[in-house]
Length: 110
Image (cartoon, rainbow, N blue to C red; front, side, top):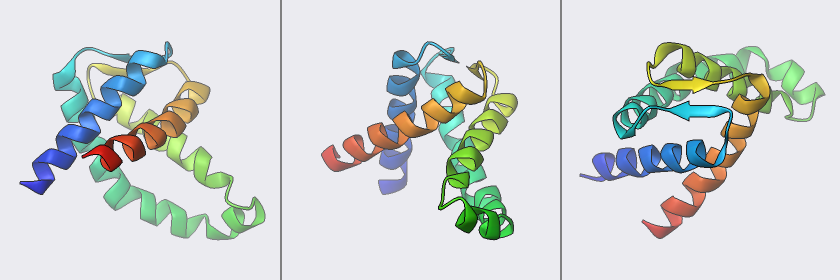
């Protein structure tokens, strides 16, 4: 039951974030649910590998490369999910930052 609640909360966070950012487009709540699943899978399997491979550069940039990796993973999600589009890298970067804040707030509430 906890998994379903977290999934729904993450989908709501995606809807809220897309609503506030004009460069991010979402066709509906169904697309948000699919985006939440795809983004979760990408963050579970691809992100750790990328973080490990880029660790020396991430240390040199004092962790700022993590923001770039997150934006690229958002763009990958946008390419995979029909109904979820991001207009460019900067919108993906901003989406990543705002989504983190919204998720933090929603997880604190639920």
